[in-house]
Image (cartoon, rainbow, N blue to C red):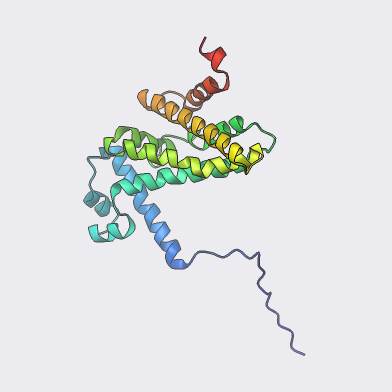
Length: 213
């Protein structure tokens, strides 16, 4: 009797994204890296789509197949940072206090090396310098709350309407501390220690009476 020698697929077998989708993602990443290098050298507002396309070896038309605008290139990366923070938060010890877990999850940004123009701190510094992006940056960071708050709610014992409210308030406060630390870091020209600034900002909320006396 013939016995098949191939191993049957199981439900747990990971499935890769289609080749076209992977190629598109790789191209977007490559063009993005070129753009961030130009932004660092020339400034965001002084860099044109034509310059990005030329440096990346693309036509202007091809550029727009991957990105609608140069603003989208920066803001899409900011959105990725929110996902990275949410992933880091899930990996924190379950017994850890939520506020401490949020602080440690923010290390994705706070401890990133600023030298690379496309790194988290490099991208954030760009956002603080480009007037056309400041408002959109604020909107994006506020959007992180929807990614982060569900895990905080789970750690507090949710889902429950009151617990969800508490989780949203806690997450919003933490993101505000992060924004304040980013502003202070950018004001120093990126010289100050971002982790230390973030510690100081979040400690104000941890022990406000002692800190502000």
